[in-house]
Amino acid sequence: MIPNATFTYLSATLLISTALIIVPSMVNGDRTVKMCLFYDRPSGHARSDPIIRQDCAADHVHTFYGPRSIHPQLSWTDLVRTNPQFSTSPWNENQSLYWHPSIYQVQTHSDDNTKTYTRVSNLYTSPYYRWDTTVQPKVEAFPKNFRMIAANTDKGANRGGEVGSNLFTECCNLPDGDEDCQEWGGLYFPKKKCEFLGIAFNMPTCWNGSELGDKNDHKDHMAYTVDGTVAGDCPSGYNHRLPQVQVFVRIMNYKGDQYDYQLSDGNTDEWHVDFFGGWKAGVLEKIIQKCEPEEDGDTGFNPPCGCADDFLTPNEKVAKTMCDADVKRLIIDEEIEKTKMLPRGTCTGNLKKKWWNKIHKKMFKCKGKGKCMEYPKDKFFLNEDGGKKNCNWLKKKRTKNQIRNICNRENGTGGFDARIVCPVTCKACD
Image (cartoon, rainbow, N blue to C red; front, side):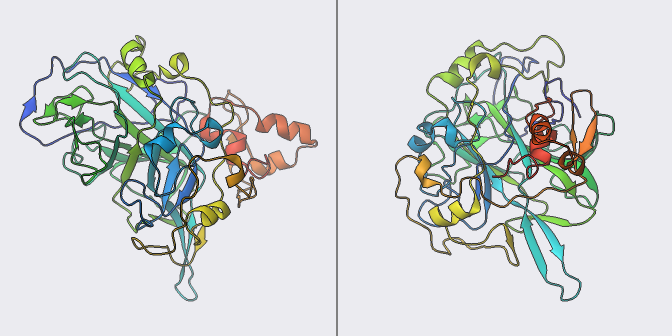
């Protein structure tokens, strides 16, 4: 599926609610604005969930995007004070944090039936923000200290969307540079190879206007719209509307023909996403008020990407992923990258005390020396015309300058640039 956007490897879903009593809207219009924020790497992986528990470790490992502030004792102040050089956010003004259960590649050993779990780290993820300013209640920016959790098992998350569900998975290949995808409603790890496996999930948009998600169950202050559209009616009791956040996770060079895959919480069919707002004051409000829908292309759910380039400042020093050695030293000392058994259990393990008030350079010791993998036959786009080469071809180039020039190219292909597919050869390891 290819929405009209500068980055072509995207897909999306809608939101739905089963509530019967509604707050009337002015119009279920087609004036959707879409803002696309592309993260070419996670900020870190840890058995941490700053929304659920701040006093101890989480039940399972999560993968985070945004600031490297992934300790359970994270605060809203920590987020908004983040220096962009310690964040994987592509835009300085947005230091929100997004996370989901980590994804593991599972290899079963035939000799003794034991398993090896290897964390998937080659992820290219896009939070998409959508809103429509022509309806009531009017969309507003996320308030200070706002957070939420949403899952595909929540009320209203099982209907609507592009494929009859708020969550969908797609296996995509690009034979000639054009996307050829097979889709499934819900979460599904197919037994086949895909140039990328996409998992797309929309979070709810209707807010009760009082709870911030810090004192309740982190969910019931939010609800899905009734008819499953961005501009749909809100259920009774939810008289505020916030931007829809869709988190689209891509596993690059997915190898379902060789391995099983599962989540860190043991699931293969249930998915959840956490969001902790960290926008600079006034910025998202201005974007909502000033950014107009694109007139060309789809005016429904997938209009062209807009807003970001006109209103936000590019992060010129995007952080690398926090390496596992630093996670062990700063958060919890346990193996989560490759293990015979996934670490599980709320409040198990020895959580390190958060001794810093603001993340800074001296906290991080491994300086890019973390583990890194690439596969010789994995392919990247050499140029914008769709020509593809593999990592083995790149490694055999005659000079370091040739390799460097290819690795530094940004061809508008996102997760299929050379530095993402071939991080060892490109010396782009975390």
